[in-house]
View 1 (cartoon, rainbow over the protein chains, first blue to last red):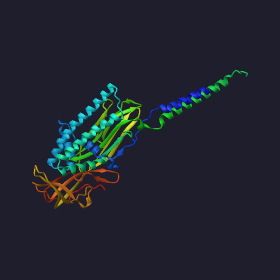
View 2 (view 1 turned 45 degrees about the horizontal axis):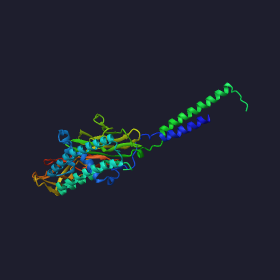
View 3 (view 1 turned 180 degrees about the vertical axis):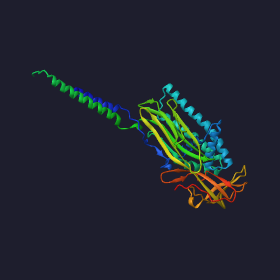
View 4 (view 1 turned 30 degrees about the vertical axis):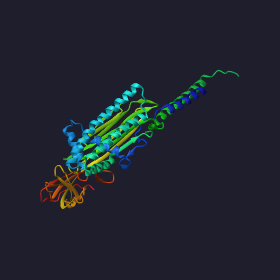
Length: 171
Length: 252
């Protein structure tokens, strides 16, 4: 009976250590809730989310175009700036789709060749993504009127209220 | 030491104790499994995820979008595991069931999901959308979860021009000039002040001259402390003169 008790204790401790954490709806450390702290949402992240939401494919449906038009109206750009932004958003859509494909292909390739997909790998991927978003912002700064750029930036800052961002502490 | 054979009742007693110990341990283990400390986050080593919820209104249509995206790699002790990313948008208003869910995983690492919904609205309509985005690793639990539940209120206010303009901007290519036009609300006493208590509307003043009256429409979001209008005037429609006082929307 005593040896059985010891086995149970060992099993118990082993089980406690081995049981993976159970899923539960909770907020990860490092999560920023834009409705509470919009100032903690980085501009580059906010611009990316707005671009992703606003950009539509080149062969967009009429409904997609109407939806995009409603959001562009909120920014309040004049006609020229609206056209410039539309062109840039269209370009962003294609470039971002290419980026995603590239990253996913690279991950598959890394798995196939045994290259570790670790923190460094992910950080480089995130850097490529952020550079792409930054380049679109830089391009917009040169082609939009100063007033248009201000209006776009005001819109993006306001939109931070609807954003939540998270990255694990090790990132 | 003298060996004494156990009596049948003695053996039964020992078996009973064993059984009780077994049962107690089983209950304890089940309880332990159910209530073990949750430490999911530390195990999901390489992931980022961002969520975004937004809305706009135009031509009596409310558009809502929920986006979740990021680089998601669920890793546990150096081994990758399947992940699931879900993005849900529901219209909770009775009669609408237009929400849907997107899922992605496990082969694509870069998640980018977007749900868009558009519904017709009339002044004073409240459209109760809820959105939810999650990234979940089966072994490690939720890495990212966020949800929104903001009822949208479609507000309407009639305004009368006071004549003065500011912040004018002329498009060099089209020659169209847009200004902030100072206005006062033009609502019945019962609906004054209206939800959308405007002092200006942004409208074209040239080449088409401004109107003396406008019907303005906007979206308010219930935040728990009152409606706020995050895009003061979504659009304003010019009216002929004169105009009677209107029943503007007034909910508080």
